Image (cartoon, rainbow, N blue to C red; front, side):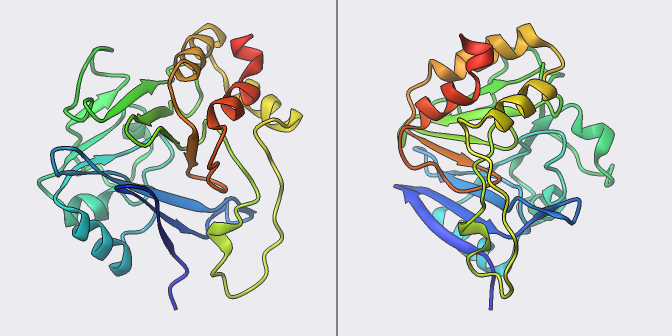
Length: 237
């Protein structure tokens, strides 16, 4: 039985949630997100294995045009996505090049290397903000039509209930909510350039979104902008 939970959270927005433990110990869950664009193509934030089940649903949505590497540490499955969809553009962050084992993988665009105003072709549907002052060099994405913020490590919402809901054994779960003191301290510790994080956190806060789709933890279905502002109040206020 598959341990991946496949769900449409909004029209044309599908998530693929499954167990994942950071360092093999901390149960944070993992999630990929696929979005059907207005031109019929598909944009995929690739952060979990491309299982047969996942690929089947993505293929139902349409032709994959973009494979997204959301930060420097979410690169484990980029190779299998790129091999499955060789014609898709692979867009990631420059620091991934230092960490990725498969040096044969070629990127078509890199945040942190390309000029800041570079457009990659999906901007009519999805905005992006590169956090140059964040340790993992994360990128936040806004799917305008569904008012959904998609991100990797910029905000956690633990426990990862949905991601472990098909797990065959009980796993102890940690709690880390956007408005918690612990989350705020973690975010402050991950800031390598305070002024840059302030700038980018405020940019995201200015976006119109209600939902947050994190790679780690449960989807925040409503009041997402409020949750973001609470997590980043040290940088925004």
